[in-house]
Image 1 (cartoon, one colour):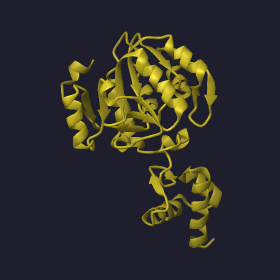
Image 2: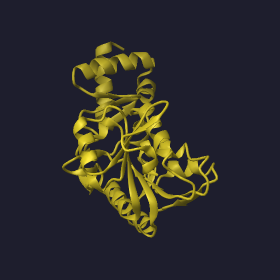
Image 3: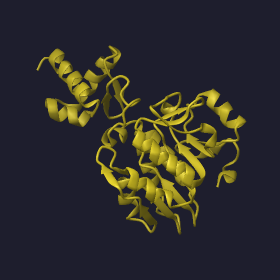
Image 4: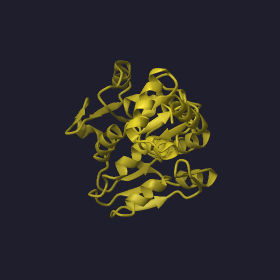
Length: 268
C-alpha cells in the first residue's frame, strides 16, 4: 500500500471512530507500529488529527464527547500513573471515599492495597475489578453498564450514590476552567459527578495540565468547591494563583516525591 493511500485510510478510520489506538490501526492496515506512528506524526503536522500517547483522535474530539476508555487509558498514561500514586497517599486508614470512573482515578485504585479499613464507593467497573483483589470494602453503585466508559451510569446509579456521605471524593472531569469550573463532555457523567460532589466532605480533583482551560458541555461544580488539586508541574500560573486565593490546596506529583504548596500534612 502506498503511503498516501495508507494515510487516507488512517484519516478515514480516525474520522469514523473519533478516537483510535496504534494497535487498532496496525491490525486494520497490517503494517508496523513504527510506520503507524510516523504516519500519525505527519498527519498531525498537517493539522489533520491529534496524536495521543497510544493513538490519535480527531481535532476537537473529546471536548463534546467522552473518549472510549481504551483510548483514555493511553493518553498521558505516565502522568496519570504518577498522579494516581500521589492521590492515593491522601487516602487514610478508616476513610470512606468515592472514586469516579475516569482513567486517571483508575490508576489511583492500583495503590490502595496497603491502606487499612477503607470503604470505597464507585461507579467504575475497572475500579471494582482492581479493588476486589485488595482488603478494601467495595460498594458498587450498580446501574446501567456503559461499555464505552466501562462504568455504571443513569438514574439508578445516581440514586445509589446519593445514599452515602463520604470523607473524600476523587474526581477527574474532562474540562476545568476558572470561569465555568468542572465540566464534563456527557450529561450522564456530569450528573454522576454532581452527586459525588454533594456526597463528599472534601473534593479531590486529580488532573494533569491538559484538562485545564477546557470547557465541556455540562457543568458539574465551581472550581472553588474543590478542596485539593493533585496535578503536574505544567499547571498554568493563573490556576496556581486562583487556588491560593480560594484556599484550594495543591499537590504537585513527580516520580519520587510529593510537594505541597500548603504542606502535605494539612491535606489529610
